[in-house]
Amino acid sequence: MFVAGLGLLIVGADVLVRGASRLALSVGVSPLVIGLTVVAFGTSAPEVAVSVGAVLNGETDIAIGNVIGSNIFNVFFILGASAVLAPLLVNRQIIRQEVPIMIGVTSLFLVLAQDHSVGFFESAVLLALLLIYTGFLVVQSRRISQRVGGGEGIDMAAPASGGWAQSRIVQIGMVVAGLVCLVIGSRLLVSAAVSFAAALGVSDLVIGLTIVAAGTSLPEVATSIMAAIKGERDIAVGNVVGSNVFNILGCLGLSGLAAGFSGIGVAPSVMAFDAWVMLVAAIACLPIFLTGREIARWEGAVFLAYYVFYVGYLILAAEQHDALATYTFAMVYFVIPITLLTAAAAYFGSGRKAGQ
Image (cartoon, rainbow, N blue to C red; front, side, top):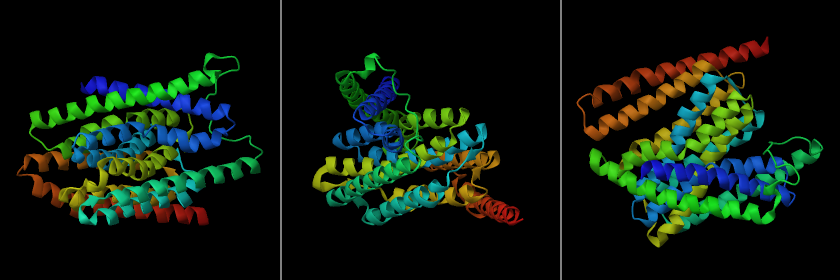
C-alpha cells in the first residue's frame, strides 16, 4: 500500500504540474510565473494530499509530522545532496527575499502553535497569506519579464505546436487525473503509515516526520537534484525554498480548514523539539547562502550529516534508548557549536576576499 500510494503521489504530482503548466502557457501566463508558482507548489501537492487526507482520517499527528518533516528534509537532505553533486550558486533575490520569507513563515507557525493547535481561523490566515504571496510573485515576475523583454524565465518545456498536449481539454484532463492520483495515493500512504507505526511500535508522529515526509518530498528531490546536475541551480534552490513556504501556508492552511473548527492538534514534543529544528533549518540557509552566494560541497555534506543526526535522535527518542542523553549532549554542546563557528569563519573569510 505504501509503495502504491507513493507511486500514485509521484505520478499525480508530475501529471498535475505538466497539465497546469501547459494550461497556463496556453492562456498566456509567462514561463517565469509558472516556474515560481506551479513548479514549487506542484511539487508540494503530495504533502497537501497526505496531510489533508490524514486530517480527514483523524490522524492529525501524521499531518503535522508530514509538514514539519518535509521542511526539514527539504533543507538538510535535498539541498545537501544537491550541493554535494554540484556546488549551488544562489540567486541574490533568494537571499534577500525568499529565505527571509521562509524564516518569517516558519516563525509564524511557532507563534500560532504555542497553544498546541492550529485553529480554523488561523488556517484561514495562512491560506490568505499564501494568496498574497502568490499574487506578489506574479506581479513581481511580470515586472521582471517586462524589464528583460520577456525573454527570461524558467523553461517548462512547452509542447511543440500541434502536439496532443496543445488541446485545452487534454490539459484540463491532465490536471483532473493528477488530482485523482493524489487523492487515492494519499489515502493508501496514510493507511500504510498508520500500519507501519503499529507494527514498529512507534508513534504516528515519528512515522510522519520520517517515512511519510521523505516519501512526499520525492518530487522535490527529483526536481532539485536534476536541476543541480543540469546546471539550473537557481531552480534547485528556489524549488526547496518555495516548497517550504507553501507547505506551511498552503498545506497546513488547507489541513486546518479540513479539520473544521476543532483545528489541528500539535503535540507537545513537536513544539519542544521538531518545530525548532525546522526553524533552525530555515535560519541555517541564510549564513550558508551568504558565504560567497554559494552552497559549497562541504556545506552540503554538513546539511546531510545534520539530517542523519536528526533522524538518529528521533529513533533513539522513540525507543527511549539509554544513549539518548549522551547523544543529545554531544549534539548540543559539540556538533552544533563547532558547525556554527565553522560557518562564521567561512562567512567572514568570504567577506574579506570580497573586500580584497
